[in-house]
Length: 207
Ligand SMILES: C[S@@+](CC[C@H](N)C(=O)[O-])C[C@H]1O[C@@H](n2cnc3c(N)ncnc32)[C@H](O)[C@@H]1O
Image (tube, rainbow, N blue to C red; front, side, top):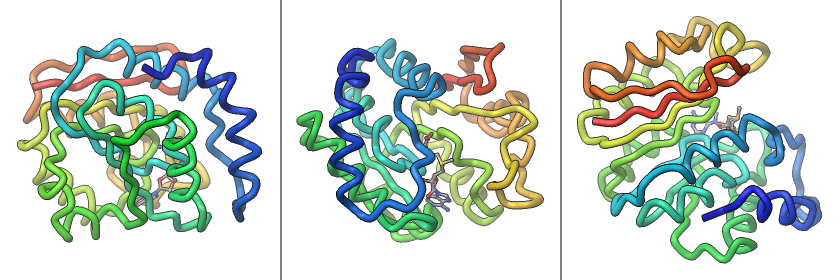
């Protein structure tokens, strides 16, 4: 398990390792409350003998946290803004000694079209601040894959998701709890909302 103490202690060492690679922008700050809540939530899960995909994994911290609860953790990121996030993610996994984490630089639609979801036997997904980045085509592909999933953890940001970042007109532009629920609920019966009164509520969605 990646404890908060480990994360906080490791972060300054990680930051200096990440700095050595060409990183433009550093919007993922693993010590921020939103990610800590994500890690707390992952740590509270039972162990699952299935593989998980961290969609838009950025520096890989959530995939690394998930790697102790799932058989394998995969991460995908288009790395559009910053040519180094997959390298950062690999450094993160190595730093925490995880050998069951695998990261790919790809847009999500290409990842799913190329068959990586099925090949990697992905049965769970982490969607942290990613759905509002996806175009409708990618969201449709994800929707078709939902019946194959057993679990999803989704962070939302009601009313502010797309500010300065998301796809205009995206289905998740307002990224409310209700939008996320209605996307997942046809395939999942157990949806619980955590941290409801924070800026980034979290949905744990199970079959
Ligand atoms: C707001 S950041 C969130 C990063 C991380 N999940 C977190 O919660 O901190 C969105 C991430 O998704 C990636 N991304 C955006 N569009 C994507 C796409 N179509 N396919 C894969 N990754 C994408 C970006 O490169 C970025 O790293």
